[in-house]
Length: 267
Image (cartoon, rainbow, N blue to C red):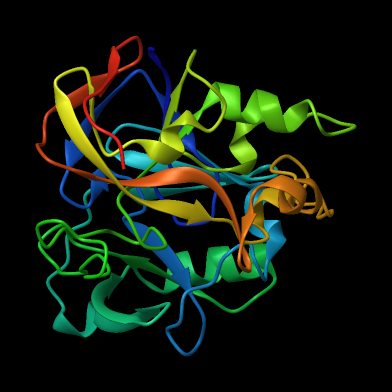
């Protein structure tokens, strides 16, 4: 099996960037979900409630991320600097309250006007803490602004199997993985415990329970019933629909497209 795709999502719930190589870090891939939009109560917002966030696309510039919404673009720093302690704020993501940094009114205004909801742009410094759920952590791992875990892997065969059951096949971007691999059996990743991508070691800790985001077209922001309706017929356990495996890393090196994916042990 080979690693065929690497993705990061610098601002939670906005568009992703495909990479050829990526640095593995304790909170996730470098620059993955280190930014987030929050509402007036400093609580995170996502495509679950605001599917129009899918229309914000991201690319790299020189020292910046270029955020594009239709014909408008704004640059946000990859590594922001701040001196004013007032920029440091407590924000809520799910049940976690963490320290972040508010980028500034001009960014808040730009996103609020285009998203149609009053919001603020928050950065999560690498040194700030957010722990992975202790019930699934192996060595007290941390995570950025991803929902719960620093990495997500999905096999192309798993998507192919799902698409064979759909009238209209869906692209992988509906599921927002960090890693995609080829070959293997459909849903093989469900049973992985310890494995390697190149020289980097990972542990599978929890199947990814899917929310409504996979039903949102990432090109138009339109929302439907698929793939949730079909996944519920064969991927539902209890009240959760699973697709993909959440991971933590056991070392922090680099991964690259084309790396071998080698399974060492199973759940």
